[in-house]
Image (tube, rainbow over the protein chains, first blue to last red):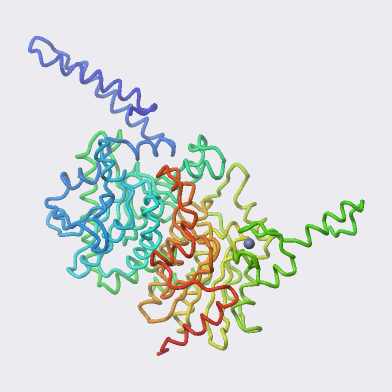
Length: 327
Length: 278
Ligand SMILES: [Zn+2]
């Protein structure tokens, strides 16, 4: 899947690769050409990625080569001990989790799992978790609370699975329960939107003391396609819906929904996994360090203030909250 | 326009006929309008519980003359300056306000249920499909905070199609916000009873409507996370007729009981009598 607006970038990348191949011959020397094309490539990446439309960002957030949970586990964490099952019914593969080490910090890692191949994707249900996944996530968060471990969640899902079994086993209840419990969890929670932050399926593991977002990730109450087909009665209006929904990282930072944007390298996370993981590791460690100094009581209080302020319509409550902050 | 303004006899007769009957959305039976409203919008033929207004719900659940509205001034907001094929959201919400006399999709207040003081939040589907906007979430949260402060049981009557897309991500955040408020009630030992009416779906079912100490539904109402059509398209098979009904949820363990509209107030009163107020 080459994206239309990336065609020129891909073409220059192909030519550089070709020259590098020819350069392997000791008699050849294309160093100057390669240097020139590399410079051109960098400029191109910068210019294309500086002017992305929200709809283009949606395409990048869903790019098949973007780092997935398994890539972060392998490339960013030093250890991962997967813990299976919700102790009720199943071991969902759309959400997985377990003990993990980030640098020297021990954390409970929970994230949506997508696949890169069709088989992987079918197994992971394309990152769309069933209620069992949300219940497993909650079980692991309560375990983290017991062991005094901070929770790190990596969010990348089109949404919670809309299936018959999912309804029968209470998709709504599972998400509602997580929101309720996460609001009072007595250990730090850092949530990261790494790709698609799809509605209830995303916030179901996304209530955090710090919410970070990769620069080309998206986070929305509904997919642009879904919104377009309802409000425009035309799915092809998705680019307009993407614009209207304000689902990109800069918009969400401005709206106070996320706390920090983790920059992706020019050309997007799918071009350089190492670079984006280095940036994310630094940001995570910084937030975990800062949150570690807060008492459980203070943590829960702060999280309550943070979420109850969102979309506040009451001027008196606003003033009350401000007074509370000053104290 | 009154019927007496109409020109011809036939037009007049037609209006009279429409005024006379209500067609049941459940079984399509024609029921005398008077009988329909006397029966609290419940079909005498099939028992379908149709939507009612917040005022009808207050009259039904709260002792006469005891309802005091709280936070009536809170209305809609347009944080994204959203506009779609039908025009700006600001105009749409203003029209809904004019049409319903409400400022948001929920009315909140304090009152008494057979003498027991409670805080109630009552959603009304007429207001933008009972969608969960920032103002809706704020009023629900403030109800929970009021209930906590005064140690009064909180009762929320839900009726909603889900999130309000026009407020984008802020609508989604209301799910976390309202649940945070109710979580405090749980930890403080203050009762929260959720009443699910037709329909309770999407973001409202996946937040406050599902986390009551006791979840009560009206008979036959639709309750679910994803829409029926979306599920059928996803799994490519037809769903059973009773899918996502109150009875289906009862059988699967997600609601505690089903109560007819006329019996709801007594049931609430009997349940709240089990709380040892400290
Ligand atoms: Zn009927």
